[in-house]
Amino acid sequence: MNTQRVLTGITTSGTPHLGNYVGAIRPAVAASRAAGVESFYFLADYHALIKIDEPARIQRSTLEIAATWIAAGLDPERVTFYRQSDVPEIPELTWLLTCVTGKGLLNRAHAYKASVDKNTAAQQDPDADVTAGLFMYPVLMAADILMFNAHKVPVGRDQIQHIEMARDMAASFNHRYGEHFVLPEAAIEESVATLPGLDGRKMSKSYDNTIPLFATPAQLKKLIAGIKTDSRAPGEPKDTEGSALFQIYQAFATPAETANLRQAYADGIAWSEAKQILFERIDHEIAPMRETYEALLRNPDRLEDLLLAGAAKARRIASPFTAKLRHAVGLRDLRSTDAPVKAKAEKSTEPVFKQYRERDGKFYFKQVDAQGQVLLQSVGFDSPKDAAMAIAKLRG
Ligand code: TRP
Image (cartoon, rainbow, N blue to C red; front, top):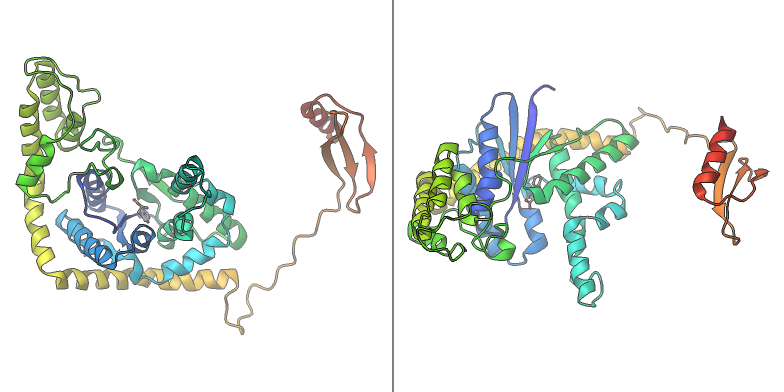
């Protein structure tokens, strides 16, 4: 397989904002146009259930996000564009992966750990209000990715750990059942790290500091007016460093435009003027998409058809692959006779060294054979390292 497979998902738990656009949608749409790339884009509505228990919001968000991707230029003929919950093979794979995933790996997931830390700080039960869905989030995400053997996964930095976990799960599945999965890699758009929000922190729903992608021009203007700046007066040189306004501009502007604004900062541009420049730059890029977006929202029929066609396309891959995976793990037709039961690897009959510490505080080792018979007993060492070095010497 020579074509690169690129896959990414957006959780249908809100209204797309500029951060989603710059960090995920725009680079994904651009990548989908490259030659030699096969792209998969999907609406992660199962993931949305982890955060949201209002059915109408899930539905609305799914509609808005689907419309956004099409409006942003995604060509559903060229790519595979689908809704996660239309592909039942994904939750099925989630279970297969669950069974090769260490619980300890999931304990270390940032999102879960953040909840636990918060509870612990509040002197509550560590798992208070933590659903098993939140805990399992990385496994569902790995299933999304591994189902289509994606090589590259464009995501925000906050998702890198999830891709690493998907790699771990792929590797442990492959180790047990043979090479079925490609090990995916995160693809981070380096030039736009994370877009800052109105308050200067990362633009994120959870900080309530977002600019909706398809705000009306009037709303957009008003929100931009609210971007946090320092109190430097017109005429005073301004710092681009740490300026949310500048960083947002940079995400939309060409390098030459960015250089111009940098110069304007040095020359003491008024914040109100900088905000006007930012407004115009963003609106210039968004306005044509906004029109398409609004037309799509008025006609959900078109989007629904498009998503169902996308799911059918996705399942043409997912369904035979799942059959193969089921077979690999032993969920099989009882009559099938290939791949006979492998004898479990013989337990080693070689003697082994065991290290331990005694009450005297010293470090010892002994060599025992397969029956547990002690063949050799060491003297006490001052450190485990000394003991290990003595073992190494004995091994030659
Ligand atoms: N967890 C991702 C996010 O919140 C969304 C997502 C779900 C995803 N499954 C995915 C992204 C698979 C990439 C690949 O941004």
